[in-house]
Image 1 (cartoon, one colour):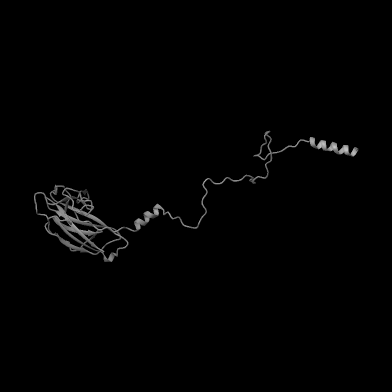
Image 2 (cartoon, one colour; image 1 turned 30 degrees about the vertical axis):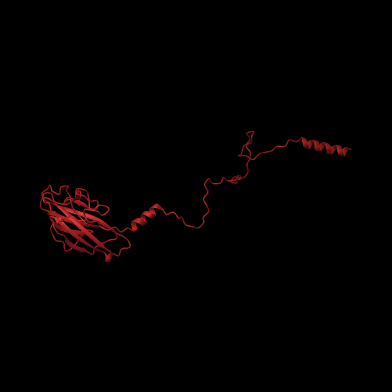
Length: 241
């Protein structure tokens, strides 16, 4: 009986000892007492998943080309475009008198830019200039064709493009021209063309150019010297490649 009483009292004492449960937290208990949360550097939390996870690398390259790469490719591979004769619109049809030729520029002797107006005749000299056709017309720096300076030098220019499929040694450019007054020079990419003569404003002269063409933009310039009154220039350019 005595030993039984002793065990019973021990059991009651054990039940009467309070049990303190410590919750894992970030170093402070609910009573404000700091608690050792364990060794520093041990992360016992589950990491958050990224909000926009990257897909696994499938090993397939990105099919969408970079815009700058596309621009570089366009510059490296120019698209061939043929030269336009004077006096023609974007559709290759002859423009009306007084309209501006979109394919030819013109500058005076100082380099000042003028406007390339399409015309059929020189003011006051009807029928003197070579008659217009479906393939070309005269252009002039002045809407009435009259040079107000009395005399001047005017350089007309146009461009065309040769693409990568073109064999440059096989390119040939035939230029037919007529001008008021004399044609003094023709250049291709800044290099003088041989065989240029002054000519007249009532018939075509012809030169053939086989060099120096480049891949990309090529510039053809024709310079006219005017001795007074009306001035203008007309040219037809036939390119074979």
